[in-house]
Each structure stands twice: as C-alpha cells, then as structure tokens.
Image (cartoon, rainbow, N blue to C red; front, side):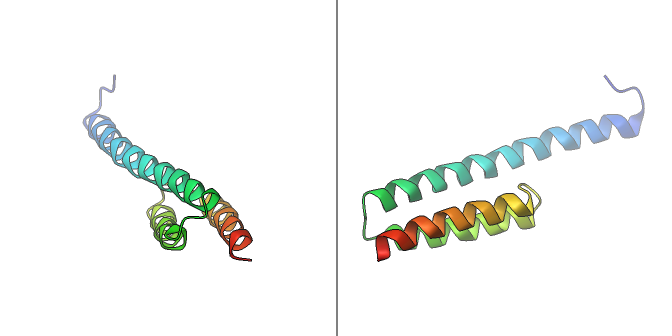
Length: 87
C-alpha cells in the first residue's frame, strides 16, 4: 500500500485504466472471434464484420491498449483469412 499522496493517486488511476483497458481487450477478442467464425462459415456479412474489427484494432493500438506489432499481426491474419474465402 502506498504511503505518499501521489503514489495513492497513481494507484487509483492505474486501477481505473486497467478496467478500461480490459474492457477494450475483451471487446477486441470477441470481435476477432466473431470475425473468424463468420469467415469460416463463409457468411455474407464477414467482410463488414472484419472491417469493423480492423477499425477497433486500430483504435486500441492508437490508445496504447495493444502494441503496434500486435495490431499489425492481428490485422494481417484476419485479412489473409478473408482473402482466402474471397478467391
């Protein structure tokens, strides 16, 4: 437990930031999972769902929730899967 006033404030901030980041990560994982299932099922709305997922991935990276390389890897893998069913 912190003793200094600024350390106490920082602990409060980190707790709230952690909750916020976890919410974004959970949404991101759900969208990626749904996109993959839609692609595997060759659903008509797969392209729209992937586009939405890519947008959320970009926003998460921009806010610092995920790293740049993680963003690029996830986007690349999703796009590759989508392109395979398109052909």
